[in-house]
Image (tube, rainbow, N blue to C red; front, side):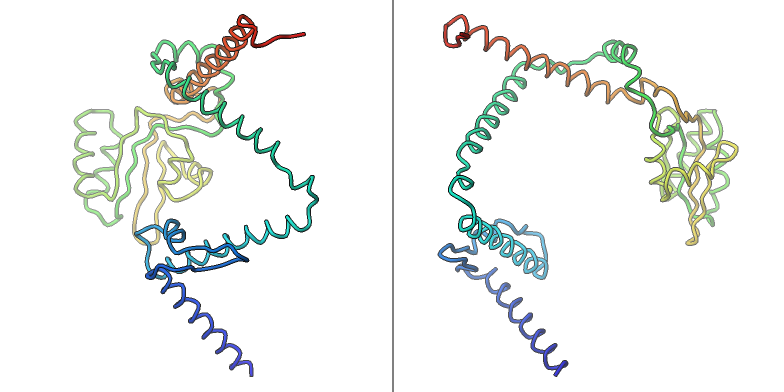
Length: 281
């Protein structure tokens, strides 16, 4: 009996999948809750063109179930809630007001926002707000190499990477281009330890534990070598301005937007008061 039950379930599932697959190729009603119908065209809008037929079936079923659940919730809520609780007109109007205000503010800001930010402005903001830029994790300047341990150029590239001579670094870059899986020189750019750790495929604490004599070496069982020469490291304190310049730029723009909105609000109030459209009793 157990085998028969399982067989029947599999057959039902197969019929369901075939049915949904058929929906995807024929224009018809695909589901109905009460008097409300869901049409194939609505389901198709939800399914990307690039997905496989199997994924199309799964996505269609997800959408149909979600659509039905929403309607069933509405039905039970309408039956169980009082008329007072069903009245959402105030909430809808409040939402409409908020949405219109937000859209106009965005239009007002986009028309007036000065997005030009100079290096001097970044430096000035940074110097005045250094408490906002405390490091959460160590940051490093590195040269990174991902290569097969068996590569004939591995040792040579590692030696050249540790050099400060431009010719050696150019040679390292040339050899790595021909031999390495990946190579980059970020010795003049600060990197978050967590970002660098992703290249090593470990968490940043594990990566930093492998730091010895200015190098990080992690060997993989598949014969690959992950290696970095640490040109500089900063473990704590206030982040350098060049590391957080993007954050400073975002904060400056945010402040400018805030001031524009404040100006808009004050102008609206003053104009309404002057025209007697706004009266305080």
